[in-house]
Length: 162
Image (cartoon, rainbow, N blue to C red; front, side, top):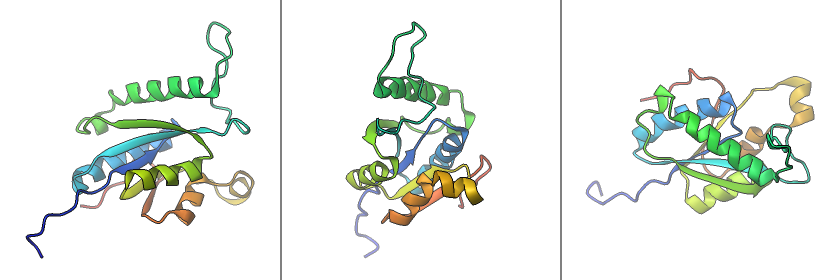
């Protein structure tokens, strides 16, 4: 059995909300991808238009109102461009960057399944107590529902075991 060829491993899926927490998750995933000999897919879920998050800028510098998808695409592009200056991501092959619309936890799991992902790596702010109960946690929901392993990265010092 040792001589049988191994099936290629699925990618590591890294959802991003453009925060430093998701940047830390991407750094962790980049190190893990080298250890697992696989690729990384960076995913942004544009929130359902019925409940847009406050971090999308709806008005362009020229004063024009933009769609949520247009605002999210610009922020995703800027986030990806900023990764080029990150020394912790220097050895990462070209990222497969994707954007979908919907409810984040649901869409993350759907994309993971469609890709055949072997792992989901998410950043988390680590809210506790009342803040967590009031706001909910996308990461917690993904962990509860995911059929594949999920790694939650809470800080930039997280290390990948060798």
